[in-house]
Length: 224
Image (tube, rainbow, N blue to C red):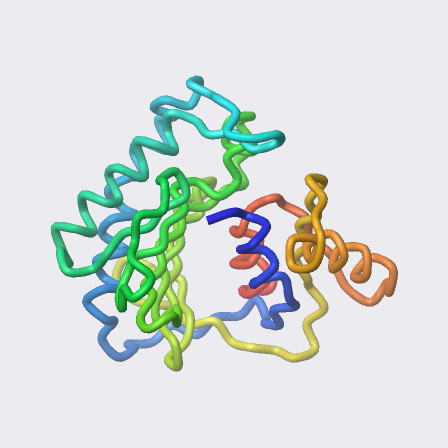
């Protein structure tokens, strides 16, 4: 699950406002609740930085820590306990999911590993449910703050509080935009993050954020 691909798919303006309504929403999907349980189970590992000093390079400008590996293993264990019928595909694994797999978890144990390894609290733990090639639900943990967020296709996105959900409210006038240029180069889709960042800066229309983690998309979506 290369970050260049993730950013190419998500590298677009997300308009919202910082206000969020609190209310009793419809019941979340069981899979969404399972993703939240999995995220909660790994936060102690992340916050205690277990394995954070065990760093190796996967490819130029792309590292993995011992924490990534431990978090991924724990996520897989908890998700399997809740839904053993759902396949599992994660960044630190060799892809082994069949092409015709209908349902799978798509996981990035630490998005923003370079930030995490350097002690910069800007990273996320991402879990998404893919059904018939569409992302139907997702849960994100902000590694720096411990805050949790969920979204379900067609229903909305929320910050998770202890007893309620605070819904994101869209505002089309918001000018925040997340960019993540990539110095590894490439052509076509692989070059999209860099080309998008250059265009966003050149137009001088947007309030640009560059955080090197998909946690930036949460910040943009909530308006700050």
